[in-house]
Image (cartoon, rainbow, N blue to C red; front, side, top):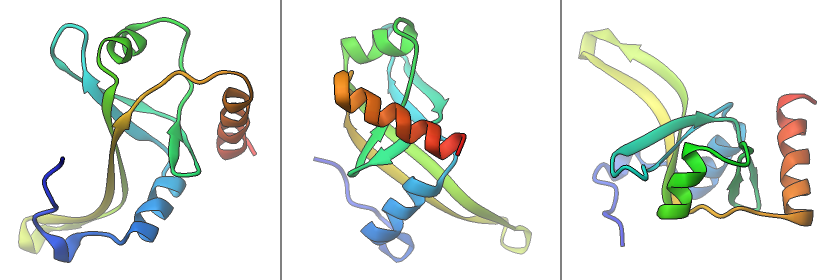
Length: 121
């Protein structure tokens, strides 16, 4: 379904990828906007059982986009190091693809509690 990573020597193992997703402070949720343009928005989030959860308002552009096309990607960037002598940057990142859904009841409560624990322990 998706192209394989071209530089496999730079690819993180699944465990390291999940740790990076769990530890990062924010991520960029990317989607196709309801207007047809790409749309990426930084979000606070939490990771529970390999699912990414975020909180948002009950209406807005983000939900309009998801309701029109729920295929999304989510990217986090961890540690970075400038390498000026190589005119490059060393960094770790994780990119996830999936579908976004609104959750309710116990799942929503679990996600909200996890977000609170992560950002306001």
